[in-house]
Amino acid sequence: MASLSKKQVLEKVTHALESIRPYLISDGGDVELIEITEDLVVKVKLVGACAGCPFSMQTLKAGIEQTIRNELPELKELVSV
Image (tube, rainbow, N blue to C red; front, side, top):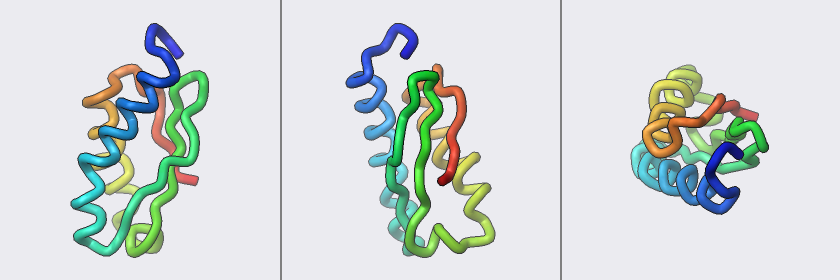
């Protein structure tokens, strides 16, 4: 995982998700971390209102992915599972 330990990567991703979570919850949704792969692909699951929202891809890419990139510039990709 690049020069960061697994623990450091997890902490950065968790911090990023916690920072965006209040916005998702205010719209009736949330995000769950599913997996972080060795090559820094972060897999998440949108839940609640976010799961069926027509804007979920925009939320995923413009909101969640950008927030994680701010904490972890090495992020390869964010994927919704």
